[in-house]
Length: 290
Image 1 (cartoon, rainbow, N blue to C red):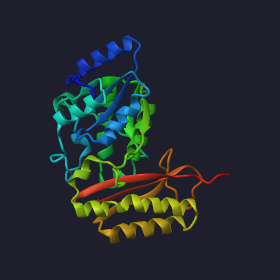
Image 2 (cartoon, rainbow, N blue to C red; image 1 turned 120 degrees about the vertical axis):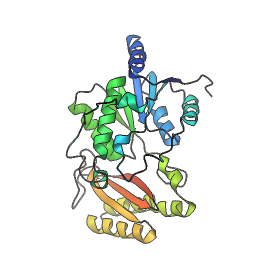
Image 3 (cartoon, rainbow, N blue to C red; image 1 turned 135 degrees about the vertical axis):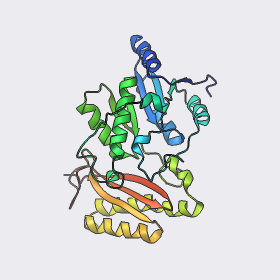
Image 4 (cartoon, rainbow, N blue to C red; image 1 turned 180 degrees about the horizontal axis):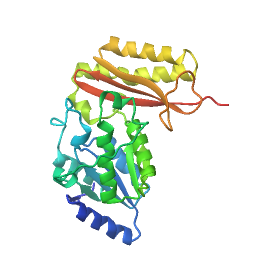
């Protein structure tokens, strides 16, 4: 286990100076942006990006711009001291943990927006969410200028949006997708899982089970796509979910809706609410072999 403390930087000028020093030495730099409350899913992203770069920066910033008025910004877990210990265990080189004034100083007026692929799915129930994500990630990438940035597969729409963002704005960072990590019981790992009561956790486990069933039905052409999705939504509601915000099949590359049959690699994506906790998940669907 690493006993060397993780260096913490809070100012963008200091972050830029450190990364510039690494780049001048010919070292490659990777970044894993997070909102903290780190779990084994985040740490798996660190281990994955370490395969591709020499130095790793993890950022922790609970971004107010991506929370809606009735969402959990104020109660979102903040535990920097515990997070730093976890980062030390996986040999992270630098923690960038800016204060809110550093990210959004007085007079801040700019919004970064991506169209089309931000429509539907998570955006339908969270208006403005992706503008908040794209704005803060644009700032983080320009503050750090990493060679590679890694985002989790669980937030697949977010990953697709950020890949589009860096391409459109010529940000010189390669955006990669880190494998979706699950808890031992199969639930997609999330910082919000701590909000679940034991009964709610039991209900939540119907999400991965239901997605697996949809994937199997679609890949084996057992049912028409919409019938499979309608059955899955009803099953989740019958299992105790308060709301199923969406359960859809989209093409993997551009999130275009799939209406009738799978012709290219696709994903089944879901967002559902149990108790007061909103959970998301997704699974790949293979295209038929020609």
